[in-house]
Length: 302
Image (cartoon, rainbow, N blue to C red; front, side, top):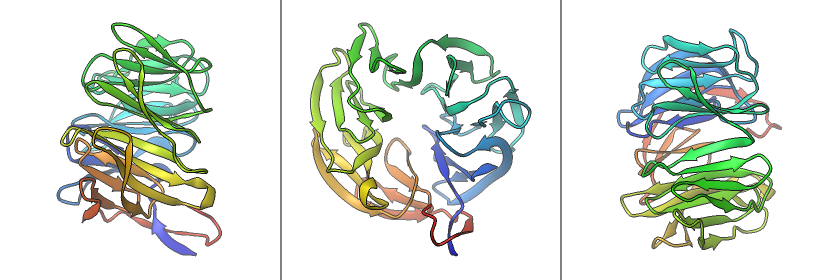
């Protein structure tokens, strides 16, 4: 047996120094990043596997969680991030792959394994809109631009003028917007940077063989895109990097020793599943969250 972090998934607040840390099922903790303080711990409908089923709203005051099954112990539910009090619960929603708040915090995006993509009111949980043939939605914090991952036909960049973007792989891993560009990364494929207005490709980064970029983020402070790269073909080696000089020039910052990471505080820090708070500007650890630990069998990679 070996002892390691019990945290399986992280979700950051966009405009506050808070992060939600989820266990394999039910329990979610909310932490203050600057004081390394555990703010709350509560039971939810959350269960881990096959997607991303937890989210904080931009202020960190609301936490949404989802399970795979519907019903009182599943569905999609919203809780107070500080007290854990349940505010609403959609027991009718099942087979949820991911939940996340819109950049404004007004809505909750809910992606399902089958059925129509749901757009819920963040205050009540009521369905505001549904999308046909859409697997995932990413919205820009700088405009009304949306990137829709279609189930069968690549991607649609929806704005004043819609642009079709072909998929180069079987799965979209992450998307990040800047004021005028959008970056996307695919499983086993490249990172592409596109013009937000035209959808025209500006630059492309090809990771080494058996490697892909899991996470992307834009940092306004230096106007660079950052990411986490995973060498999946040779173990669990992960690297924090940036695309320097506003282009596609790869620049390694530090090695990571975790199995999940989340960018926080407007892209200034990266929080890992082992509790490290890393400055993305210099790639150094600036704080440590004391995440709970558990024992894992030696032969199982976590």
